[in-house]
Length: 118
Image (cartoon, rainbow, N blue to C red):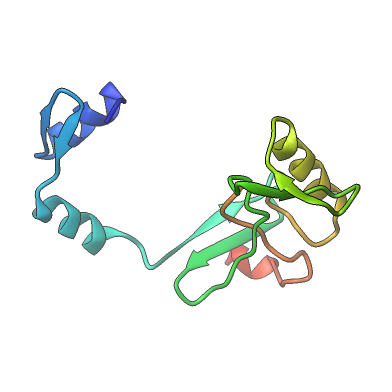
């Protein structure tokens, strides 16, 4: 693990760090899983849209970390290159159905989002 702060945080809860190697005892993982909420919400930039992340919800995202990219102007599939994530974000912003442009989430604007506020 290259991040010194992360190694320090894990060490404070009982993990064993030697250099960049961190050994996490099973009890730490089991406690983390036991205290993880069954769902949580990811909020949009406008604070009106949100997405529920849970085992019983399906969310869609454009996959910014994919190795291949479908160029939105040509429709051609090619290897991803610099600038493609920015293009993907612009395409997502231009749609009326995709709210989140990260590689892991998205939500249909037609989905009732006001229920996220309750």
